[in-house]
Structure formats: C-alpha cells, structure tokens
Amino acid sequence: MMSSLIHKNLSIAKCSTCCSSLKFKNEKSTSKGNEIDLECTNCNSTYYFKSGYLNLLPPKIRAEICTSGILARKIKDRFHLSKLSKNEQDLVKGILAGKSMAKQYFRNVVHPKHAAWSARAYERFEDIFIVNYLNGLLKNKQVTFIDAGSGPGRYLILLGSKISINSCKELKKNSETATLYRYDNTYDKNLRYVLGIDYSEEMISHSTRLLKKYGLGQHLYKRIFPITGIVQNFHLSQKGFDQTHKVIVCTFQTLGNQENIDLQVQLLQSMKKLALPHGTIIVSVFNKKLFKDFGLRTFYGREVKETVGEIINSKQDQENSILRTKRGVYSKWFSKEDLGQLFKKAKISNYKIMDEDSLQAVTGYEQYLKPEEQRKDVFPRAIVGMAEVR
Picture 1: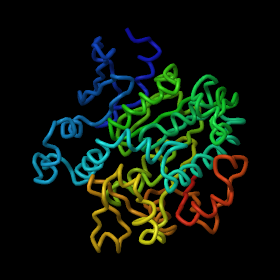
Picture 2 (picture 1 turned 135 degrees about the vertical axis):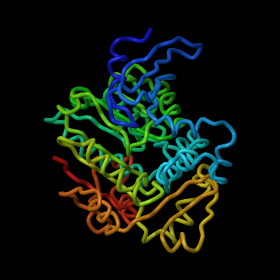
Picture 3 (picture 1 turned 90 degrees about the horizontal axis):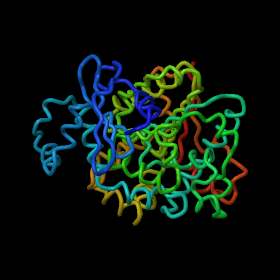
C-alpha cells in the first residue's frame, strides 16, 4: 500500500468546493496501481489520487468533463450547463480545449530543445528569468514554488532537475540545456516543494509520466506535486507551507487563456492568497502590439497550429486582440496597462509591469538563450508582471 509520507502529502490542499479540510475515504489496489479517495469533512465532495497525481476538480465540473462523447454537444446545445455558472461554463470550455493535445503540446510548444522557436525562445526567457530570481532567493530562504497552469510539467521537470543529480540526463548533457538543468545543492537544500496545478487532467497525467521518464518519480508527492485543479479555487492546507517563501508563477499566456475578465482577476486573486503570508507573484503574457502582425502569423505557425488547431478569429476578436482556434483555445493578448489594471482589480499592490522598454536581458545562459535573442525574439512580445506579497 502507499507510504504514510504520500498519505500525509495528499493532504496539501482543502476542498475545492467549500475550502474545508479533506479526509481519506478509502484506498484500493487496481491493475494500474493504488487509488485513494478523499472526502470533504464539510460538504462531502469527493476527490481522488490515482496514476501518480491528485485530482481536485470540483465534482460538478468533473461530472461535465468525464461524460464521454457528448461534452462538445453539451457545450454547443447548453445541455446540463444550466447547473453551472458562466465562469464554470468557460472553465469547462478551457478544460475541453486541453483535453486532446497534452503530448503534442509538450513536443511542439514546451520542449526545451524541440519546440517551435516562436514558442521556445519566449519560454526560454521565462525559464532563465525565473531561475535567475530563484538563484538569489534560495541563498537564504526556504521556498515553495507553485506553477499556476502547469500544462505538461515544464517547471516541475526544470526545477526537479536541479534537486536531483541523476535526473534529466539528456538535458544535463546537452550543450544548450546543461547549465540551466544542472543539479544545484542550494536548490536541493532550500527548494522545499514544487507544485503544478492545471485544470486539464490530460496535461497533469502526461506531466506525471514525463516526471517518471526524466527520473523524477522518486520525488512525486514528496517534493513534486502535479495536481489537476482549478487555480481560482485551489486552497493550500499544510501549515508547513507558511514557513516558506512562496513563488507563484503564471507564464506563457496562461492568464490570457482564461476566457473572461472575471476569471483572469480571480486567478490573480488566488495567486495572491497562495503567496500569503509572504511570497512573490510572477506573470507573463503576450503583448497585443504584435497581435495582428506576429500573433496571427508567425507565432501560430505550423507546429503550434498542429497542436492548438486552426485560427477561427472574427473581426471583433481581432479588434479585441483575442485569438480562438478550432480546438477551443482562447488567447487574450494584453498591453502593459491592461495587465496593470488586472493587478489593481485583484487588489495586488507593490507590483511592477515590464515590457520591451524595461525588461533586462538575463546573462549566464548564453547557450540556452543569448542576450541579443532575448532582445530581438522575446522582449517585443512579452509583458511581465511581478509583485511581492506580504
């Protein structure tokens, strides 16, 4: 049966429906491994752990997602969706959009060596920007890292490689990625937990398989936690997290993938709450100045379109810098002022918003991304927001 340590660490979060504590309901062995059911102590909502990851989707959302074969028709014809609020309906659409593209998304959009350059350059900058920040923070602080919208586990793998000597061997040996993915004793000592939250079970399932493939299976639900859940209603429960400085990131346009302003503000509000009593929020979105000339052409080139589907924009969408695809992907691009307004609506203070005029090239990772590549291929289309939360 599952170790007591994993049992303990499955209690990292509270109920997604009412924010009460969870208790273990039962454990069973199957041909695919052990399964554990968890139950809310207040509203009796149920959740589960299986196949190496925890599923904390609210039951009424999970019921819509798990209905095989008719979900697209249900959304189109509004079948059953009267049970859900407008925000919940929009979340269901987003979950559906990610349902069929987890493997392709890692290969074509996220992979540190093989993804399309239009995506890879931007993500490489995010990687070194965040690691550069962590390098200084970890010298004298214990840190919990939370990726809000973790997809197929990009940061779980990256940070896992830095706490495990024998992991990610292919990336540690490659000249482009070796410096970034190398083992670091400071990370091993002071990076306490790495959590990845994504509302797509397929993305989380794939990230769990990738963690095992890259030699990080030993850290699952001990230090690395892939979780299927909605960031807007995710609540940490372990008091031990409060003893760490929490770094909450939402990168590569995840904020813009939330299908309305309410969900965007709620996501930022949840990040703020997760960061308390002391932490840092880092958000990265796409700059709408390049939406028509770059976003609708170069960025959504062959590899990306192969993954997310053909663009189906209306004239109104283009005027509002919103991109939609046949697979249901929604992407709102922002100005520096737009992102600042969202921070204000979320009541996040002490923040700064950076664009091409204020972003600084990160050095020390020239094999991974040269300073001139940062300035040419990333800065014109990046908006980065940071806030210290206390």
